[in-house]
Length: 229
Image (tube, rainbow, N blue to C red; front, top):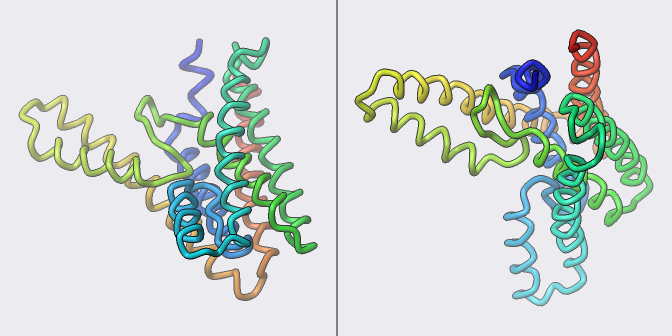
């Protein structure tokens, strides 16, 4: 059953792990790749507009590349839902997405160490957008592991509904969702914080932290998938 297959990635702890990865990837790209946000395209659009408005034409390429590859990553990941085995097997599709993400992160780290900017930006953005598109819910509650604006809105709505809504069932659902989303937001902050702490010592080698987080997510999924009929 789909509910059984989805159980692994629907768990709160797993969602938090994915979100830590999202925070670490975005902070890595910001600190090492010309201030580009791999997982925050609103920020890239703002920076693009500022650079254009201030005449900084030579600095536009990384932001344009990230915006375009983000859309490409969404389209490519969405297309997986229409391809044979990947269409019918959610767990296999999740493994496929995380495996590709791991490879993209490793290649990005190597290229960043060699001084490249645009290609690592593109690869990291593809990685982030694929996970943004594939992983969407915690026990049916919508969330995103890569960008926090929507999560902040959801958390605020849940807090408001808990105190205002008259029905007990609605209050319980709001409380549950508040716990889910607040945990995700804290996890994202932890991912960013870890990267910021190690950046002065490791510089671009902090990509190793992103690799570790993604590898744990992938390994956990593969191990648990063996128990799925």
